[in-house]
Structure formats: structure tokens, C-alpha cells
Length: 196
Image (cartoon, rainbow, N blue to C red; front, side, top):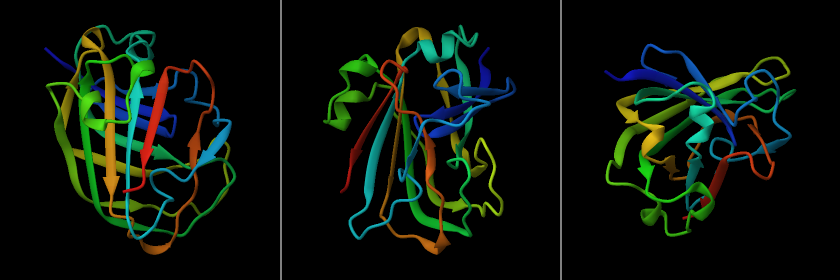
């Protein structure tokens, strides 16, 4: 039986929601503190050509938090950088894919397709709302919440988690906050960015 999971990723402070289990924060230790950097990726970035990026999370980011078997990822959440406000808006065309990588996160390649495993799954396709952040807080507010249309079953015993996200660069609304980010060697996460 698979357990559900909610993942919070602080490479960009993001969370994945586990089916019934709760929340996982990655990198480990970021659930109550703001990261040491701000990032425009993926939801403060706009341009005419779009954006494609991959996040690779080392399996240890899950196992050290007690995930020892398959979990079902059902939702993603992204946190704003501390002490920023924004009025919000939406990205009308977002695609999100997940897989278990055949590569270690430190061996990720810029050929995005080579980083994905055989369980590659489109987990979301459609608009993403960037909620307003009306007041400053530290750590930042969870301001982007994406319920996955297709939950993803992830087992850290089988490899690292890959989350790939793309959008066409269009944004409808006023503005978005920079996303909470953690820049730290050896934090168990790698981000690859391609402006398409």
C-alpha cells in the first residue's frame, strides 16, 4: 500500500503533498526557516520564449524524513521569499512531469530527457494561480498551490525524484514574488534551467 506525500522544495521552497501522510520539506531543514536566496524560477519568470526547468531531489531528502517506501505525491506548493509582497496573477499554460531518475542528482545532464526514468508521468497541465501575498512574513508565504491531476507514486529506494516544469512565459495579472530558494553545496537538490 502506498502512502501519500506532500513535498516542500526549498531549492525553490516547494512542497509535495503526500496522499494521507502529510508534508515533506526539501531540502531537509527548510520547513520553518527561509532559504538563503531568492529565485525567479519558476513563477516570477516571464518572457516571450518560455521556461523549462528540472529539479532533482536526492532520495536521501525523503529517507532522512522517514519515507522508507513508496508514497503518493498529490500536490505541489511553492513558497515566496521572505519579506516580499505581490498582487498575484496566473500562468495560463503550465506543464509538470515527474519521474524516478536513473541518474544520481549530482550526475544530472542538460539533456533533460536523459534524466527521466521509465515512470515519467505528466502530473499537471493547465493554468497555475499565483496567489496574492499581501503582507511580509519570514519565512515566506505558501502562495502557489498545485493539486496534481495525476498523482505520482515515488519510492526513494528506486532512485532520485525528478520534477520538470515548463510554461510559455505568459503571465496574466499584476506581479509575483520571488520564490524562496536555498543555495548550498551538498543540499541534496539540483536545478537545471532552459529558457526555451
